[in-house]
Every structure is written in structure tokens, then in C-alpha cells.
Length: 510
Image 1 (cartoon, rainbow, N blue to C red):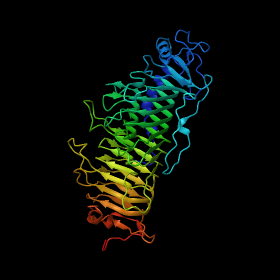
Image 2: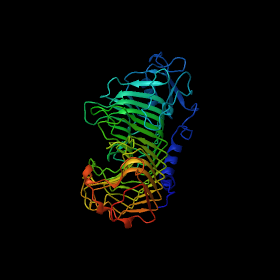
Image 3: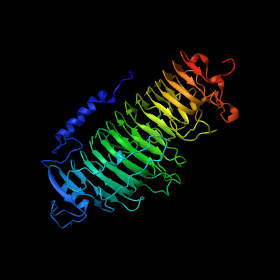
């Protein structure tokens, strides 16, 4: 598979279907996502100073969003609902017609409230500064109880646009999808839709912020989510179960470290030809959930009565992960032919600590195959790359390897506790025939943690650099004395064609 492969190019058939659908909607669906007005469609207006007995005009607006959405649900040819900044309380907004636009504004229809996802951040290991969900800037839906209700429901709908909205304190922030129909194209567009404080913290796993589809029974295709901020979803941040979706400039923060409240999955893709770009995820160290970062996984551990989903030809580009248990992960046999390009992971390792917990780079597990990780940067991570196996994908025939034909190309790794980890958590016979090539690893405390055979691995034209000579004892291998349970025989000198070693105490006779 060439390294310049583009899922968007290979998804022309799907995108053609999307374009055909959008053009047939009786709305101005071809207009840009960010625009100042929607000429030609019926318009309704909402403000906290209005009354639901008013006619819903700009001068005499309605008071509740549902009053306007219900009117739009009955309007021919779609409609636009303009909502002025303010706190609209615990409304549960439900769309029952396609092609409606729900547009928030600050002072006058068409203006642009602050884009919360563009707030300044520390790209290293500092705690982000979370912007306030100010009702003076844009409309706010506040459910009042993060264990109950859905803020906005798009189930079974197509072509809904939502722009400039804040949602907080619900069981689920926004949900979309259609049960049992993998071909149903929704083509929703979300821009500057922000979600905070979601899910019941008394349960072990509860609360999705932006959910498009669910496992293998509800699917959602062709959606766009841009410029959106998610803070403290007690289970999952952004999830796409479907094909041809795009996330661009989405930020997911998990700052709740105690109990079951912490975010577990940050941005998840369960489908094909999806893209995640220019996004940022941050997990507070010590959180109850380990933190699955940018995740591509099939549903073979959770089919829930539906069909198995292969997750292929997805693209993750120009993203950042901070303190994740798995920064960039491909998971299960159905995860194949995906590309991760020019992404960065940060961890907490300071170069001196005797252990490290959280803040990992790449994870390849449970038979994922033919994936590429190109021009990845790993800084202060606990491990650069981990190959692992679990009991989550045990269907016959079981994948014999942790991963097959996966390539890591031109990775740059600076100051990591472990370099390459082969973790024996299941019963795979071997790590698999994967390659690390043209990469540079420097200031690595222990280059290998190997508790699984790795006879098929190859490391070509790569520089391996430790910390010997910098005042910190370093080994090529994490020995059993440090709790590694490793076996040096799992790593052979013949597996390193064209590679070099610097500041490393190589094993005797190796």
C-alpha cells in the first residue's frame, strides 16, 4: 500500500452518493458550512426574552427552541431556526424532518460567536485551560442532570446543520444514526457545537458527548463535525459508527480523574473512509479509565446481534494526543489499511523516573493488519509502540499474530521509558511480520520490553539511541529484575538491517 494513499480518493463512490443526496434535498445544502445566512428557506427566531405565543419572527421571537424546531419540522422545504445567545435550560431538542438548520448567534443572526475549540492550549504536558460555556456568547442547553436525557436527537434524520451551540449536563449530548441500515446517509453538519459534563458518574461506564451510531445496530454516514470542544464525557467523547465521516479541529478533554467519571474513549471510528484531522485530545494523569485516544476498532468484542464491521481506509492526520493509555490504536482483525500520518503523542516521562504510567504512543493489537503510521512524533512517552493481544477477538479462525504487515515509517521518538513493547496479554503465537523503518529513537530508557516471540519483526534503517553517557543507566532490554518478565531471545540482531545503535548497553554476544 503506497504511503500517499488517501481514503478520500478511494471513497469516491461514497462521496458521490453524498453529493447526490445533498443536492436533492429541498434546501440550500451545497452552501459552505460556515456561512452568514440561508437565503430562500423559511426562518424562525428564538430568544430567551421571547414568548411561545409570539409569531416567531426576528422582532417577536419564540422563547423555546423546541417551539421553533416543531415549527420547522412542519415547514415545507426545510427551515432555519436562529437562536440568540442565552440559557435555554433542560430542553430535549428532537428533529423529525430533514434539512433543518439550527443556528446560534450572539447579537444578530449570522454573527460568529467565539469558537471554543480554538482557545489557546499547551501542546506539551500542561493542563489545558477550559473555556467557559458562556450563555452570553451562544445558546446553551443545560439539562441540569448529567445522568438523564439527550440534549439534541437527530436519530433517523438527514441533512441537519447545527452551528454555534453549547450543551452540558445530560446523559448524552447529541445522538444520531439509523438502526439496521448501513447505507443510510445522514450528512449532518456540526460546527462549533460544544459538549460538557456528560454521563452518570455513579455508573462504571456511562455518557457519550457526540454519538453518531452505536456498535453494529445503528449507523451514521457522511457527517461533518468541525470546531467542536468536548469536556468530561464520562464514557466517550466523539464516536463515528459508519462511513465517510469527517472530524476537523475537534478537542476532547478528560479532567475528571476520580471514580468512574473519567473519559475512556476520546475519538473513535468504527467504519471506513472516515477522516480525523487537526484535532487534540488530553487526559488527566491518574484517571480511572486508561484513555483510548484516536481509536480504529471493529466490533467483534461487542457485535450486539448485528453484523461484524471491518474498519478500513480511515485517515488520521495532524492530530495530537496527550497522556493517553493508547494514543493511536488499531484494534482487532477488522482494523486494516488505515493511515495515521503526521500525528504527535506526549507523555509524562521526565527521563529519570523508575516507572511510567500512561502517555503512550502507538498501539497495535488483536490482529490488526496492513496499517501505516507515517511521520509520527512521540515525546516523553511511556512507550513508543506497543503490540498486544487480548481475549476480545477470539472468533475462528483466531488471528495468529498481534498484528500483520503494519508499517511504522519515519517515526521520531524523543525520551521514552520503553521503546518497543511486546505485551503478552492473550495467546497470539507471535507479534507478527510488522516493520519499523527509517525512524529515529533517542533517549530511550529501555529499548525493548519483550514478553512475546517476535521472530517476524523487522527494523530497517533505524537509529536506536539510549541514555548511556547522560547520567542515567540504560539497557537495550528491560530485564526481569525490574519486573519486565522479558526474554532477550525474542529480539535477534538479524532483524535490524541497516540500523545503528547509540548510547546503549547491548546484550553480551548479541
